[in-house]
Length: 425
Ligand code: ADP
Image (cartoon, rainbow, N blue to C red; front, side):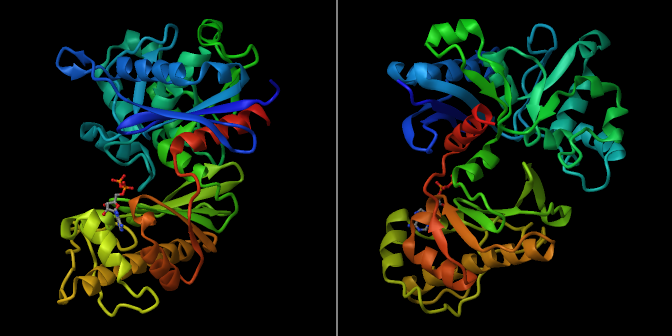
């Protein structure tokens, strides 16, 4: 009795999770579910799968904690798009998945958008919208609304159609700086389909009565706008000040830096998400842990790493990639992987690879600064590579800044922080 709790849900690429936190950010319950596979004739029925997963996760929340849940927020995969009837909410087509490419729509989008805009990619939400619009008849177009995965899941809980957040809406063309859709988009016939947009973590309304009573959530339980899964993962690390960054070192290397200035450069795939009065600047390299797995087993990685002298700079200069091409911090689609010469000692070889990836990380932060972002002053790190303490030490030496393991890295935790924000404006 008394303490309020905040629920975050993450709908990622491989499954969904929830995190229930108190106002100090302590986790009171968490859980995960894989997406069940439902078929719709030949194709996967994602609508049914996501809906089932949402309610299964709500069922997984301990019953005694449910009356304390003050608010809910959800993140979803970026550019996963659902177009529904604006009166009933019934889907008007199969959902478009985050990585689905609508190349046939790209020339149409490029003809209306400014050069190098984030919508100018075959998998952007706008290409998906244009693709759907071109193939649908007028009657259904008139009464349609576009939702992102997170918007749609939240709608199941609050029942107000047509609400999104400015992180999800970035790839449909929304301008978070001026807080509206640009004129080149509003002048299109399908602009009537675009959702209204709020800041992530904004209260949308009360939870629907039937859902509230079915699960035992309190009368004043509210539903708040969400974000994308990668922004939610950044929020989880609570790197809340400009200059704080999160390096995610999984199969690939991704850096995200909180900045007072918005930075964009299409050549390097660099763009910014708005976070209230700040900007989350990001870049992603093709280097990362996947290369390590090609050379060593995880067990070898552990044992060899222990023998590395992390205080000593490795003279080996590699560019570890698993295939040709790099985008950030060097834009070169023809760049060849460079992992030679291989020294006799495996310890030296691994040291060279780890040190080379650390140099690429540093180069990434330097590039963001050159492009105009707030300079990095502290790095939190996440992903499989962050477990390697020797590597963290090498990276600190190369970068010349403190690096520590992020305490929380789950996107569901970041979504719970948005729920907390929305419940206590
Ligand atoms: P994903 O991007 O696939 O989600 P993870 O965050 O799970 O990746 O991290 C997996 C990566 O972590 C693998 O590519 C692997 O090479 C790397 N990794 C695992 N153990 C270690 C280790 N001890 N040192 C360095 N890297 C490691």
